[in-house]
Length: 416
Ligand SMILES: Nc1nc2c(ncn2[C@@H]2O[C@H](COP(=O)(O)OP(=O)(O)OP(=O)(O)O)[C@@H](O)[C@H]2O)c(=O)[nH]1
Image 1 (tube, rainbow, N blue to C red):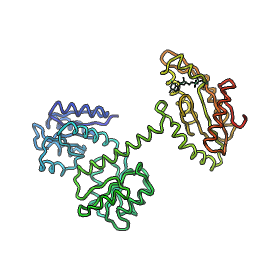
Image 2: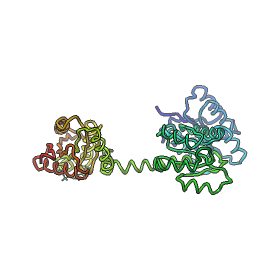
Image 3: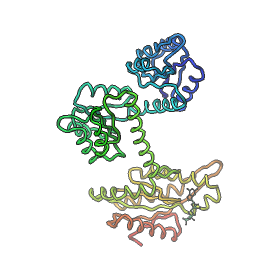
Image 4: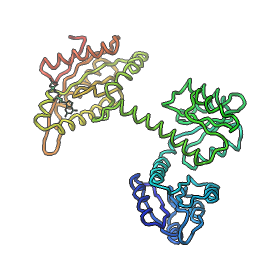
């Protein structure tokens, strides 16, 4: 079910922009154009995930709507055209998610980022490390407003223990001066265990120690906040670092995934196969490395078109997932796939592969008005102690032999 976004805004044009932003993020949007409308809406329904609140409404000109929305336990982002410092302080004294001056189009881009992350953040854990209880609670409170899952620690040693227990932690916000182990030592220790792709570190320290910014960064921190900091700066840095991690994750996903079938690609297969084989060997399991190729695939493309060919590749990937999902499957390129699986015995693995080959040969794939039949050839090497590249070349030779021998069959490398 879609989360609900409440837009409190008297300008119809701005409300429409925010509504569009909300809908593009799959929020179900309700608009209140005045304080009176807001009261009516919240009388019947307080089930809103988040609200955007215009500071000045015709019937509530001094931010009254903010307190009203927050009193219904609805987290709110304040949008305002009033830019003076007194208003800003008044807004930030309340537990709002953020405060956005409606200066230009960037304000709406920033709002979109907030609304996007507000839904994702509850799956992201952040560790706050500070020996001062009040500082810890303040940072934890700011993070909870943004929906993060928060862990806390009083010093570096405790922080390492918490990190060990909660591998889901993606970000550490650490103070500098702490007993037992300070923030710089902690940053150093964390970087020995987690690289920057997996975990971000933000160092925090008092204004009088200017050089600490560089010390934190040189020791592996990603960012730095000087105390006392304002909530807006804190949120900007947190969001920026979370977005960096998400971008790296996305780039890695793209680099290791086949775009068409969404199976792991050749790079991913080479990266993961050695580890799989080592695991199979250490538990003395029977295993095999399989190279698989669609027969006369060019004919499928020539007869039914390239899109139909793509559909066949996607369907084969689905069947591979269904049959060999517990192993490692990859599309190596074109119409060639690799599978690494363990089983009870060579016979059982052979039977499994043969059942798969047979099922594919009997299946009819429909694409638009066409019914497409195709077969696959398989080359396999069992329990090989050779290096991965050699195992792949042995399975490939067996595959070539299966093709030469008439296709739609399995050849085992050591029977060549
Ligand atoms: N639709 C589609 N076709 C692809 C893709 N990648 C490679 N191909 C096609 O796969 C075909 C492979 O042809 P061949 O190497 O001659 O092999 P084949 O026709 O399967 O014949 P054998 O392997 O000898 O049985 C070529 O026509 C490629 O254009 C893809 O992503 N989508």
